[in-house]
Amino acid sequence: MTITALAFIVGAYLLGAIPSSYLVARFLKGVDIRETGSGNVGASNLSEHVGRLIGISVGFFDLIVKAAVPILLARLLDQDLTVQAAVGLAAVLGHNWSPYLQMTGGRGISTVIGIMVAFFMWQEILIALILVGLIGTLWLKDMAFWVFVMIVALPGFVYFFDLIDFFNLFERDMTIVILFACLAVALLAKRLTANWERPEQGYNWRVFVYRALWDRDVRSQEEWTRRGIEGEAT
Image 1 (cartoon, one colour):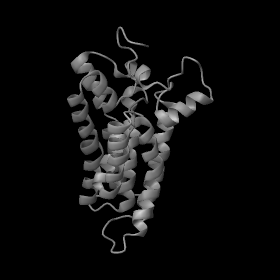
Image 2: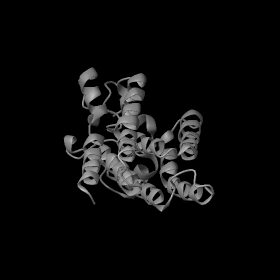
Image 3: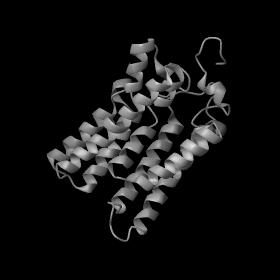
Image 4: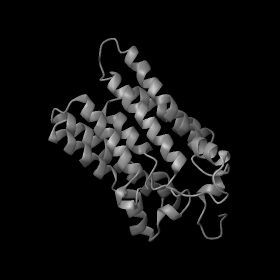
């Protein structure tokens, strides 16, 4: 690995680790977002407790600046596909486990979508929008489970679209399949470990099931997302 490639990967990790949601919540509301609602240092928790427009804006920052731009810059400077993939993975790892916040962070969904944008993975983006946006958010009103479905299914969809790309229109070789398999492991690991929070009832198999499937320690979404709000359930 060249010095340039290593610099890209380390730089992507440090850029991805910038806790944008934490900083915005501190600046606008004076709160530690890790101690509010879901405890997630990401755009979804920011939307819930600071404002939807603010959350969406920070989500786009995470998507474009943290993930898509470093990969596109690496491509522009003739770094090979393996380095580009490593840059994307580093951005997600930085976002999820930020050294600026004692290895806490977000869940990495926006940054993963940014990786798909950088690799022009429009089919996978459409599938993600259907699973998370239409089914999870608009129809069933609980996107967490459908994010889990997307995490598990994405490596398979990437492999499938690679098989049917007869004209080699997209860079979909096994490097990208392996990248998304690694991303799936990273995102599931983040769900299971959360931000190193110990559940009030202690660790048991139910907690790990809830965290894996619904990204929370309890079954009720309302109870979980309204934690830490005065006058609401905690």
